[in-house]
Image 1 (spheres, one colour):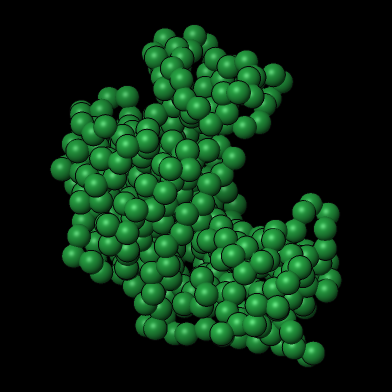
Image 2 (cartoon, one colour):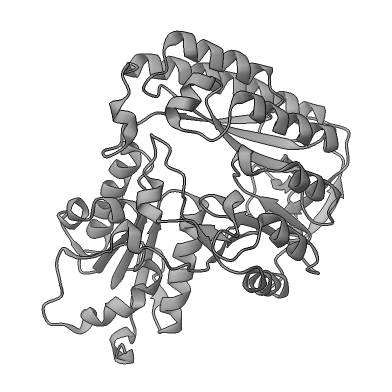
Amino acid sequence: MTDPTVFEHKTAAYYTLGCKLNFAETSTIARSLLEQGVRTAREGERADICVINTCSVTEMADRKCRNIIRKAHREHPKAFIIVTGCYAQLSPEEVARIDGVNLVLGTEQKLDLYLWLERLSSETPPLGEIETTTTTEIKTFYGSISTDERTRHFLKVQDGCDYHCTYCTIPRARGRSRNAPVATLVEQAKQIARSGGLEIVLTGVNIGDFGRSTGESLLDLARALDRIEGIERIRISSIEPNLLSDELIDFCASSRAFVPHFHLPLQSGSDEVLRLMRRRYDTHLFARRLERIKSVWPEAFIGVDVIVGTRGETEELFEQSLDFITSQPFSQLHVFTYSERAGTAALRIPHIVSPREKQRRSQLLTHLSQERLKAFYLSNIGREHRVIWEMGQTEGWMTGLSDNYIRIGRSYDPSLVGTSSRLTPTALHKSEAFLI
């Protein structure tokens, strides 16, 4: 057991990179340290502890992590620096060699981080020490909840992934798919409601695989969460198209709290590239999912992930992908440029796309996305929307998100932050960033 005096009068600074799941986990780490007496350092204050929760989805993400670690060491030169997260799990020795790093914790150790801080009392604290497990030993599900200034609460419902797409390192960084029981997540959602939270976003690595470790399903969870009083709306974050069933779509469309907003990873509109990626669907299935969503929920916002420049994506296959994507009723694309990752099966695929060509393809899809998003915003002018108002203002405007993920603004009124109201926008703001 950790000596409680270790934490007396200690402060901590937190750095998070990557996905909303990482932000939820960092919030949980911060709460666990606060329970031990460690408060978050104020802006400009030198911290005793630095916790850096890393991402490793691309080489750029790794580079950002290294830069953040060095920044933390500069800003808090005497701090005990702990690095955790996906980059720490995948490349612990590389992380441990960075100047200032005291301790590298793997995925299995991340949420018990406070247990390692008894080393703060040591006259010679560790330097570059590594505490990780192999991927096969990553088995624990740690619940996490976070909130952002936009009033949304992110509830972690699932972790890990049993898929092994050729370009992806996440299964090695996060372990096998696992989740908390529905009953546990319902209790956490009720806590959010009691705290005044109006919106929950369900997060995870592969949410559609929910129930793998408890014999339940995402539909079971959706039905249970929909009955919780006080939660006005619930969003499902990214879900694999092969795991988004018609039954789940229909339930969400007829539910009390689930909103018309879906985010699906397509990755490529070419069946040949999907095969090279080892994705578990084809373009026909993807198109059917979008058709189903729009048939039962015409106003739904549909976000789609696409990767450009993967190994094997010839010019012809990219053109096929572009044609398919253009034909689909999406609202916005999230375009990612392929980055080679050590240890992935993609490295065995011939045909490498040049950096310049990757950039060209990315620009084409980004332009298409901008056009579609603007058109979607314009199509929602004159319709009444329910908006949850957020903190912050821009030139006298405050904004919030509608049920179908449109940003809407009105004149600033601090009393409205965290509340919901209905509003019918009549125009697109000159910035084209929100409706008014």
